Image (cartoon, rainbow, N blue to C red; front, side, top):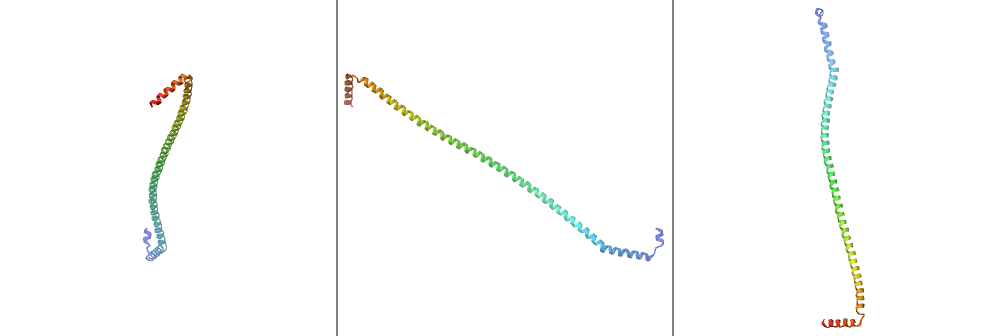
Length: 166
């Protein structure tokens, strides 16, 4: 360094300083601005990217919340549908049971009516048979009782006495 200081020349210093300033001016005008602009543009795009990422993150969070709400609503709706289906099933079973009971009651009533009609028919048949048998027996008794003339006279006199009294 001492050798450099020993040969110090003002002209060389002036030209080196002048060239340095010219080089600095040229670099500032043609290199620094484009470099600085690209750095600023890069910084701006990074900032916009971060903002977009934040917006996307917020949208994802909102979508997740919306999905949770929709899922809860879907579950409630599913539970409501299942509940309604169970109620409809129970109602259908109850209606079917009631209808079966009603049909059973109608069938029992019809059977009772048929049994009563058959019973009445049997009783009437029995009465007519008893009446026929009674008439046959009465005929036989009367024939055996009225076979003699004395008995006939006795029956006629008894009938006359009863006829006069009435």
